[in-house]
Length: 294
Length: 120
Image (tube, rainbow over all chains, first blue to last red; front, top):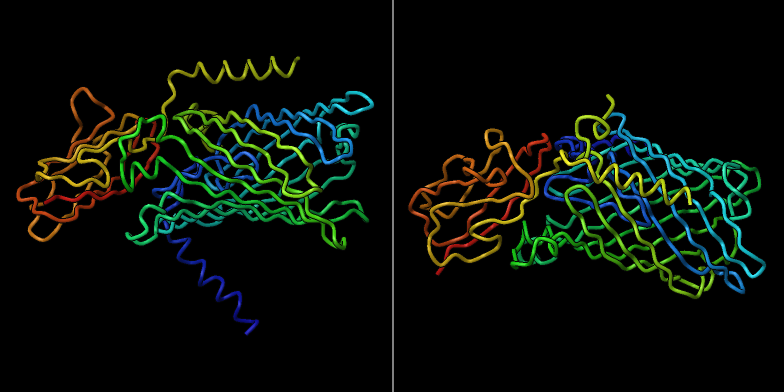
């Protein structure tokens, strides 16, 4: 049976590959997956998240107040393969004084592995690299480089039966990553996250137009959840946040605002917030910066 | 302080990209998406969020038995964001499905479908 697994997997994936290629911008068939704030979406696209600003109190006792200003530029090298560069500047207010500096810089390589238009499915695989010693250790930047092979997925509910048409605007995106620090004794971790979204645009253009203004139809209420589970460490609570919020997706840009609610005591005791301006470079510069290089 | 300047400069640079176009999503349809039309419609009009190239757009309308069919998608004079499809009589009561695939003026392709019903 074991020897048949690769063949079965190939058979299962074959229909995905027959489907037409997805466009950039997180679109597969009828479905548009907006860029999410906390977890990465499955699309390979030309886009820029700048700025992303978050503020929260850390889980330290007494807690520190942390503000991050970050950005990420994603560039398609081919229609299915892209690379992203990210960085963040952190301001940390501690009882002993203020410190600020850059976090480690990161690079992500992502390949759009499969799409299925009828089932509004998008699957990508990637490798996230956090470059050690590129940030300031006073704000928590690690000295070791960390590699995180990651699986990204997005699934729209547009294939639900007509009796559940009201639920078709729902979509779920998520990431599962295995984080491996290159330092010998460092703890590995499982990085998981998902976003449950309800697209009012999908509702208005595919299910039922309620006559709402266009600006309202461009909203996507969502809940994101992010968890970091240390591996090989007994009874260590996984820090993470639950992030309810809303996205507004315009023609060239997207705005997002979410609360950051600690999921347990290891994640803190206070609610924070995150705001993002996201630019669709494939729409802004379709003939230059916004198209694949090859 | 330099970061705020960088953000502002980037926002201004991107914000002034006035010639940019975008993906064409369906903004409005007549008959409305998911609606019940009490009178048989003579046409379906689709309005998108961006201008579309009518020559490269494809719209089909399927209906209940006896439906006379639909013509090709045509541009609407003076409204580059809209397409219209004439419906041939008769358009009997029942469920209709509109499937569209359009090319926006910046060459992005989008597609979708929706239903409407003809009453009583």
